[in-house]
Amino acid sequence: MAYMQDKIIRSFSASAATYDQEAWIQHEVSDLLFNFTATHLTWEPEVILDLGCGTGWLAKRAHQHFQTSTILAADISLQMLQEVHPLFKIHCVAMDAEFPAIAAEPLLVMSNMTLQWLPDLAKTLNSYKKICKGIGFSIPLAPSFDEWHQWCEKNGAQSMTNKLHSAQSLSTICQSLSPHRFHIETHDMFVPLARPVDFPLSLKKIGANVSLEPYPLNPFQLLNARKIDPAFKGVTYHIGHIYMDF
Image 1 (cartoon, rainbow, N blue to C red):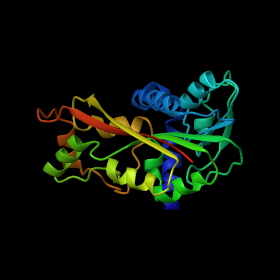
Image 2 (cartoon, one colour):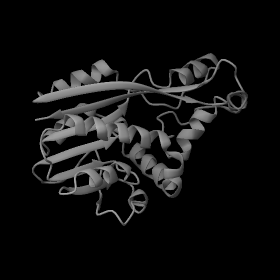
Image 3 (cartoon, one colour):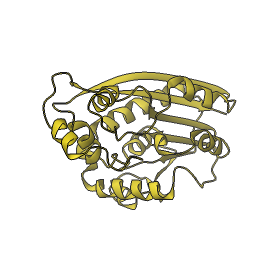
C-alpha cells in the first residue's frame, strides 16, 4: 500500500501546476459539497480541516463563508499545497488524509473526492470521529464510470479504475459510527466525451489515473480507444455527499 501511496503522490504532484485548468468536475462537486455541508451544519466550527485539499478550492469557500474559523488546507502533495492562493488566509499543512494529526475543538473535517483513495474507509472515518465534531465529504460511488467499464469489458481491457463503494455500503459504514446526525445525498454528473480514450486522459490531466492495474490498455486496445465509438457517449460520475456529526 505504501507503493500505491507513492504513486498517488507523484501523480497528483505532477499535475499540480495545471490542476485548476482541468479539474472542473472536482470544483463543481466541491461547491455542491460545501453547500450541502453548510445546509446541515447547526454549530460553529472553530477549525475547518480540508483533507486532500489539492489547490485549496474547498478551503477557499470555507474561508469566505466561515470568516471567524481557522481554515487548514491539508494535502499529501507539497506541490499541490504550493498552488493554494496566498491571498487567502489559509494555513497549509502537509498531512496524509488516512492519518490526520490535529487537536482542535470544535473541528469540522471536510474532504472532496479524496477518501476513495484510502484502503480502509471505515477505519479512517472512525479515526476522524475521534478528533472532530462533524464530517462532510464527497466521494464517487458505484456505478460511476459504468460506460467506460462496459467499453473495457467489450474490448477485453482492464478499466484502470479502482473499486468504489455503493451508496448502501457507504451508509452502512457511516451509521456504524453511531453519528448524532447523518445525511446522505447522491447526484449524477454526465461528462460527454468524443472517444473512449478521453476518459483515462481526463483522469491523467488531474493526476487521478493511479490504478492497481499497471497496464490498463495494450497497443491494440489503445488504438481502438482512440477511435470514435458511436456506442460511447461519455461517462457518468455518481457522487455521494455525506454529512454527519457526533
